[in-house]
Image (cartoon, helix red, strand yellow):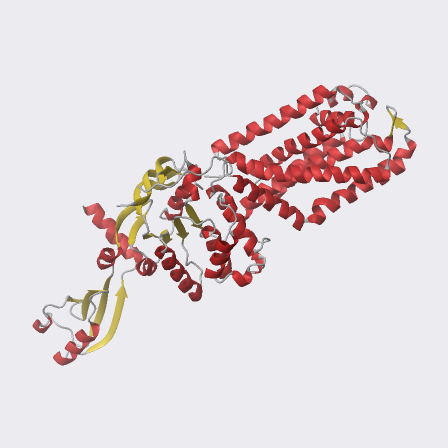
Length: 262
Length: 308
């Protein structure tokens, strides 16, 4: 039989093609990708920061308007990471163009790097834009800027991975919006995005500790104000465990071909 | 024989329990045009999907240019281009962007000159900046072909390439296929039109109910399969075939009311026969020719196989 040369061990061109394609998709839908979250965030500041926040003096020594910034960024980060990554992989399944991905010399992990990398990039850019928007409304300080960036990146990647799983799992568009709307938004609102869980009466304070988003928001807030509901090490640990769990599920998906191929 | 693609013992049972493919063995030669002929649901697309990595086989191995398609999927898949049956294209992309995307996805560095040539060959260059959703169905199919060719594959799969395709595109497609073959590309196409296999292929494989019934050179197969028949309704019934028609493959049917002439496409002498009947003073009131349909051929092949 004829033989040909071996392909390189990593298909960098393939990863780059997927990444570029996904980024181009975001540029085409720039309005909904970036402008909508910015407007939404501004509204939060008007309502919570301006109207209600003026009645609340400070939380743990931080002005209320500033206090909600990390939580607000987290809220957008989680929902946008999930929605970006899930649509990214769901759409080819829906239109049938997934045949090309499956027949391409692209490994499962390369596909994940392309899709999740693009989704996470968009989330990180979004987070920074919201941060800049917030700076227009309230005085901001970032005590641990590198930790802030680390949490931003880690959370974006972890939830983009989670979104990728949702996209593979979803059999229809309603399932795509199901998880962000019915799981992530409530968990974020109840996860101390707009309050410190110290403000909660028992047993809700303890119950809150079972909400993983509490750890994300707390760690992120620590990076800003050097104060969190839980210690920063625990926050980092929970985020890392979630990220590894998503990676585990994804490798299982590709090993079995679950909902990707027959 | 220079084999570029080898399928060994490949079968597929879907999770639903449906047996789509019985164990199949097939070798494809370098540079040939191979037509996989079979009715709808015979397993053509399943076989192609397994070779291209879209469907996981239940058993068996696929070897592409010496690379195992599962263990060494990168080298195997890089050599293959696939034009699917469905018009699955990204509606919001431009033609040029989607073809460039395909090239990189398959691990090739950008090559604008090559991409331009592919688009020109398919009369798509003028449409390069058009969004794909603005294109007609035929144009979308051209885009799919351009995508499949974008990474310069050694082997090109065309799954039912002319279903729902207009005459102009069909003609262009044949031209393209022959041009590709001249450049050394191996082409495997599936079809349920016998004419298509006849027009295009060097070799033909017939598949039915998940089994490859036969693989043969086209010329030999067409001779075997291309039987035609003409029924001549006689004005006056005859008791026996006139001796003047000895040597002609004619027979009486329908209590002598019909004379049946059997011939194949390479050996057709209808005008001579009719002139002969005129000479003999045999009058007829109707003529009806009949070409074996693919279904007839399958029944024939399966019966022959069962009898053997």
